[in-house]
Length: 190
Image (tube, rainbow, N blue to C red; front, side):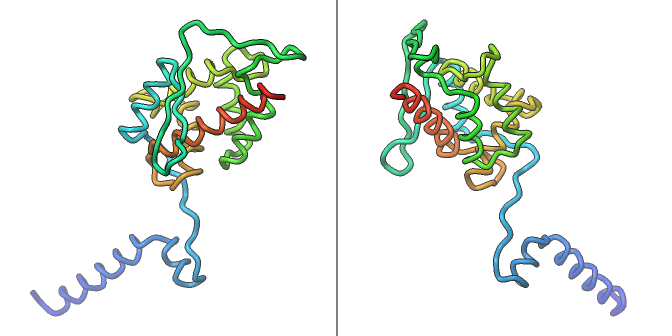
């Protein structure tokens, strides 16, 4: 190989390596701090999170356990109804405002909060019931979740609140479920 061609190949290789190292790495070297990870355009579920989404479709809510890395399952018997609280609110239901505050804590944008709340509130009554939440979580499972705008918005919020790697793990999935469960309990005791 001639020296000219070898030199050009070396320069091309250096340019390629510099371009593929990403702007985040360059800014991290200059500023000393790494840029926060950007969420992936299409987010998927890990196999464990797929199982949790399937459980949601069967009426079981997966929440984070007290030990690191553990997940608890909270089920309701089929057809169980929620009791009414004073003021007409249902126990086991979270108001639209409380649900959007929960989504804010997970880093949802205003558009995502509106889209996700509308997707979970199937009967459009201004509250998200336990069953509506489970049905919404079940929509994040399977191939259709990659093309369902609602499912992608939910997955992106879960992913952003976690490690933003493009795959929602069981802990990221259970974190949103746990937050909803806590919001339900606060409503029930209010």
